[in-house]
Image 1 (spheres, rainbow, N blue to C red):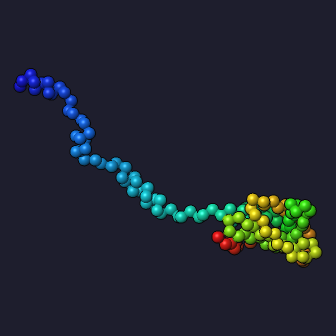
Image 2 (cartoon, rainbow, N blue to C red):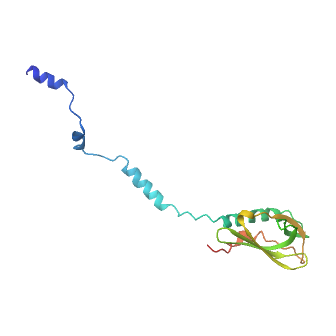
Length: 153
């Protein structure tokens, strides 16, 4: 053994980029990525958010809660005060259209048919107890439990 051999042994090996590129690469995260991709593909597709449908469903919850406290002589009504005067009517049904319109159908105290078409950004409805118009009080809150609301995209 020569002295020059000892000098070479003391120097660490050269680790420049070209030497590292020759080493085999292992992607330790590949199984995790594969599992993650599998999970993402197996998830149900998210429903597009429809603000009118959300408002409709939430309003249905308010109506059910309100009707639960009514006696047999009263049914649900609405009072709208944004028309410069107060309009009160018996609510018969509610629906929505597209992403932004709610519709209220009902009758006034004189049995005149009414329909309110309301943009969700302007929604302000005062639910009130009104005297029933028929022998049996009308209840509409149960409709949200039985069927999906009619809508158009």
